[in-house]
Amino acid sequence: MTTPVQAPGGQQLAESAGRRAIWLSVAALAMTFMLPLAGLVMAVFALIAGIRALPILRGAGRSTGVAVGGIVVSTLSLMLSAGATAMQLYLMDEYSVYQECMRGAGTVAAKEACFSQFRDAAAAKLPPGVIDVLGSVQP
Image (cartoon, rainbow, N blue to C red; front, side, top):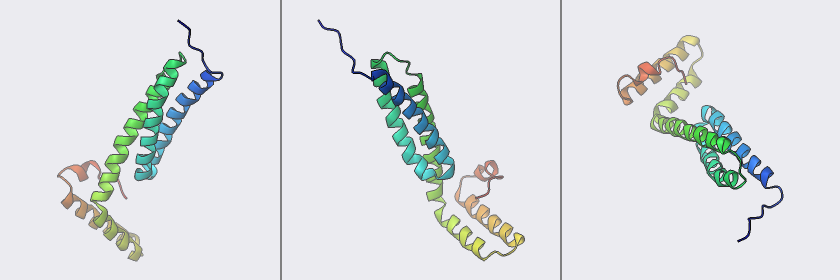
């Protein structure tokens, strides 16, 4: 029986795989708050990178904490961005009307009226109580 031979640079490969997983997941979380659809795509890449880093780290005898952290953060990013993207798609018509209203609004009062109209239209489409939770959020 022979002992397995590690390729030179195996430790560096393992460390870079773990770092890649965590950095991609942090970037996915940041993108989720700026562009939810881009955050969704990046979260999928981060999740794949984290899953692929696990056997590399185990094979090199390194701790898998960084990869597991990347998987957890990218899963959270995936759920948040999927929810935000679904909400955007669901309220697409109402948001388009809101944008058109804002283009024509020249005063603060007109802009507030546009937002009130958007909030009322979204409240009619969403389940009761959701707008109360998101009441302080403006698009």
